[in-house]
Image (cartoon, rainbow, N blue to C red):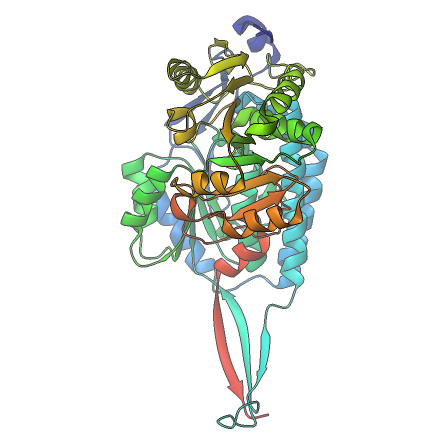
Length: 490
């Protein structure tokens, strides 16, 4: 074994952390019901904290409050001021949020701190966009059929948004739902992941402290039958926005009925490395894309497609650099790769590695597992039909798949069912443009990881990665509003 796994130490972990508790928040009111959900630290299974579970009556109260409050909307200035205050409060409490993220997810502190910074960006960009005029003006005398009139458009917020967020970015994914909704003036009810709800609930309290009226946001946990399905199916919720698995996303699409849907689902992103590539850059992107956030990003590098002529040279550089990505105690400052979300998730990844080896692949680095902690793993000669690369493998795996050329890489990727993001490493502009145009995916980055973006730019996928609806602050604000058109004779 080429990297070292620290053995989880439950007694030491427990000594460093006092379990926390968060209530549900219904229209600005902290609610306790006597029913709670436990959240445990993936590294040693110690108790991170608990969160209150609500019932159907409280869900109804949240929706009614949103509808009633929406009759007196906030001004653009008020919305922007709240978002800026929230950004300032988050900056002040960055370390305490980061520590809670690590305790919920098992991500290393470096990743948790990075996530708080991204979340601050979301709030700041949303604050700016809240002030921006979103209307258009069309002159009508540009056609023989036209008149001397002008057509104007404005936007107004939807009545209620139902949002569901995943475990892998417990702060930033929540910010990506909430900040654009606040900027647009649209009330939201939000159910965070059962695995990582504490960070989200702490963020909800921060938004209230920043001045957000209670009717603009309710956040809670509850069972699928009692809370999740009803909030999706309720005719009063005009929008459902969900980030998570393909299977659950498709189930939501069947249940939601006649309303706007934003489904940001799984990915199986390739990093395509062509023979003219800067191999040092390619190795760095392969490591960052495969191992950052413990590989638990929908845009993480899930397959490294390397042209055969440089396969040996790239692999050597990749393995050397991957050795420096230390896995272990997520709270240790020198840890770069923490745990995945559960031991079962780690076991699934471990089994996929073993299955690929049986099919002819070779583990060049890592592969060891202790509980939910899986070493950063480099696997060579992975067959294209191996489950590891055929399905989305949500963890720190770096599978290398040989390709003949760019056409082979494009055909291979496009034959799959995902279409979220991709990247290509090349100095050939023609090849870069060909990949950008022909890969059936929402994003293609050149000489960068597949997931690179800013928080306000459009983001989303096609095929089994989503319905083509984009997120990012600007696009989300559009999605959370309706367009009103009117015309005047002058």
